Image 1 (cartoon, rainbow, N blue to C red):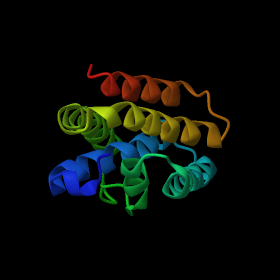
Image 2 (cartoon, helix red, strand yellow):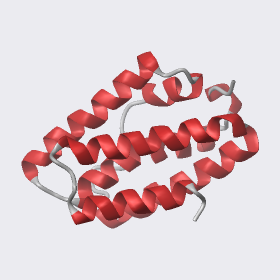
Image 3 (tube, rainbow, N blue to C red):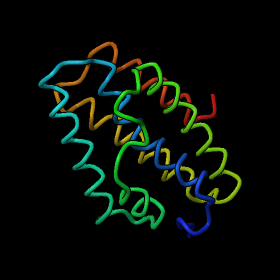
Image 4 (spheres, helix red, strand yellow):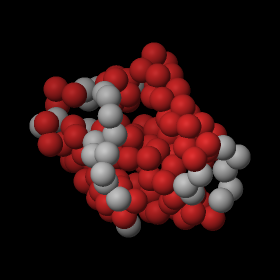
Length: 141
């Protein structure tokens, strides 16, 4: 089973940024002040649960990190591009180095994105589009 030790620092950052970026990207897709707090809480809760409950060592380790990998001044466009690029890179890396973990990673990223979208009621057009784009990136599109 793959772990952090199997990846370079750059590869690990791409893997982490894909997960946390997915939550941030969905949150920014429908910007509402109060929804943002609920969505941030959902992201934190999902990561905390994965740290203690995932069957995959890789997912547990990815959930341990702090921060999103984006600076405080990152624009929504930067978050979108950075997240989708990170997801594509992460999948390519996993398919090369740990193909048995690629599906677990895909599921984890989508669970994070959907839990953030659902935190404040979900269903907004912007959030749905962000989830569609994340899903496409996870498939290598």
